[in-house]
Length: 287
Image (cartoon, rainbow, N blue to C red):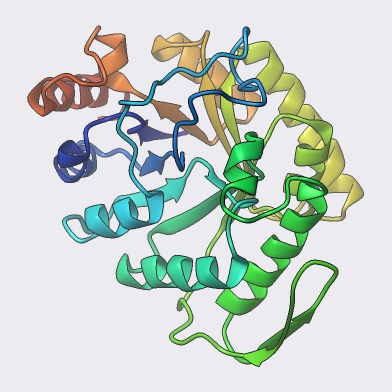
């Protein structure tokens, strides 16, 4: 099982140093979060906390994950990056295809595209995208992104998007893997049907086990059980050598961790303290 560092809510001026240290320590990837803006009043509950509250406020730092991947990729050479997850619903697929292709090329194919729909109506509507029928719209977006990123001339004539023949060059020299996020049955079906992996938000171990079992069933139904498939998780109740061994035995291929939180170091702590936590974690569980 690999280990990936989650850098959500870290100050932006720490990101390149954290990426360099994570690479030196043997972490496989950096997980890049996505949040467009903080709306003072939200129309919907945040789906990944028990009470629906957001874990951040208006002053919490966020960075565009694609720009962050390019910046961190420029100061590293082996560590990978993936969005965890980028909210597709509020974005335009052609503009996004240009960005993703650029990051994949600039990082030497060290970029994976973790995708989700998005939970906040405001992120759709205030960016000019409809919230209604968002799932079907995102399905078309994924299809478009895969086709454009594969290279060559592409045209598309769907229900939501329509364009004639076009090409974006250079295409990535290797396919960009798509990791589909979400905990609902619809999201799991999407991951099994079109994804190169599934990525979770915060989950308990028992829920991860049952989700992996369901994904296995769905991938078999779609005739994709023999393809490589990443299971990326943020587990909130299994830690330490025994806990990570349990995750690996359950089928998790990539555990997303925030080592400084284990040491009581806050998101806004100095970068040196976070680097110490990365090294400590690596000494215990990676090296």
